[in-house]
Length: 386
Image (cartoon, rainbow, N blue to C red):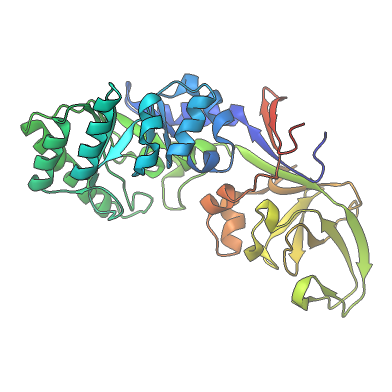
């Protein structure tokens, strides 16, 4: 099946390149966690993890279900769930040796009891809040006392200590340095209390790129794994990255419209001159954002074709008046490169006031993922099961 309607092409060589590029910016021996939450930022968690596993030291997910999916598909390296998990998932996680994030004493006590009941131990990473104010124990000596009590609980093995940087993707590094100092202080308090932590990690993608917090045992690569930069403010010249995903489609219909004709729902676009309009069989049901209505564009024959009117659930229209080769079946680039022209996720999402992380994560399950390595298709993920 050629997937003419829409396909996401996932370049596994670019994925590996990005990992190796980041490693060159780290001190030798620094471990790399590949963050594959949200189905690998829309790229497909399992194929991404399978390709990355030889090059990384473990994986991060947001949910127990994501972590268990990796295990059930044969991923054996350490997996950490980077947030709190409801008790209903604990037993399955314990059986699969999936790492827990802990920062509350009552939760730790309950997990300790379950681990002892199952005759196993829970591998945990303590989360400390140094300024994000999302999750984590307070950066106080009282919290360090609590962390020490958690670490002494039977059935609990404290493997890691981490925090999350809230503003590492900004030019002003002072807020990040305050967080790093708070983390150092808390880590020192744990050492004073005899708590041995073997994996300390702070840096996210922005930290890796700008070398903020990379001096600990491990870093967590998220958006950078997929070839995108966290923001325009990070120092991009330090680490070259290659986008991993392209989105391709084909024109399904071409028609001429006169001046005064309206296009799509609500008549938000009215032609002020005769135009050639192409229908593209892609819409917000595929994850192409509706916020790009009248603001986004596609590439056809290496030329820019602006979107006209509202993006529909399954289709959208583009102005191809200046694209003479536009015809039914002509390839359309929604994201990626066409000849010398390119549409980047940051640029496209920004045109509609969106966010490039969101754009990638929103690509829906009905879009086939075609995985390519060495220029050849190695696997396909398709809801049809074909």
